[in-house]
Length: 114
Length: 141
Image (cartoon, rainbow over all chains, first blue to last red; front, side, top):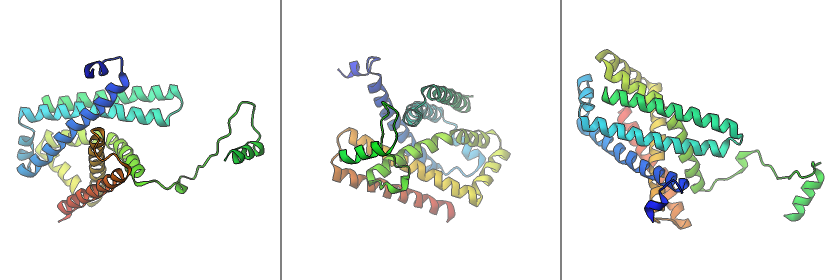
């Protein structure tokens, strides 16, 4: 039943659940990041580097950014759907949004893994 | 109501088939219930956070690239005006965070009655303010 709801037959349901799950992922990462920041107190360049040194943290950060990309895609797309009545313009804006989010994701990937 | 609508239609020359709707362009005459206020702020803060994404990436990149660049970023973040902007962005984040948690709670049927929803709306605003004030204390003291 649940799996059926999440297939391509129900794109609205998928978007709804994606928005919630990515939100949850980002909330957990945010709390972790704040805790880590307050425990490690990185107040020099070396300390700041070692803050981003562990591979698990880099992967977690990238996972956060992936969740953020999906979350922003659905959220800003909804804003366009609500406030841009001109369908053609709305499609253009959606494509720009998508391109930006891909660039940001690639940028974040490069920062965390390169 | 029906009567008003008819009057409205008569006084305005309408093309055949055109619907006449009452328009109220002065948004300041609309008083938002607290739930609606939290809701529109959730959307507005989401948009703001989306807009500053490239700045976040840029700051992370610069701060990690070398000791000099790191120092430059630290200096920028320590200037009073930037601190104020940072506080605004932080409030946007906190509001979006707490309003999002409220949404998740309602999705699992927590706090869904009108009275409870109003109460959690207030909580979201209060938590956002407390978190922002706590950060302000960290930044200035």
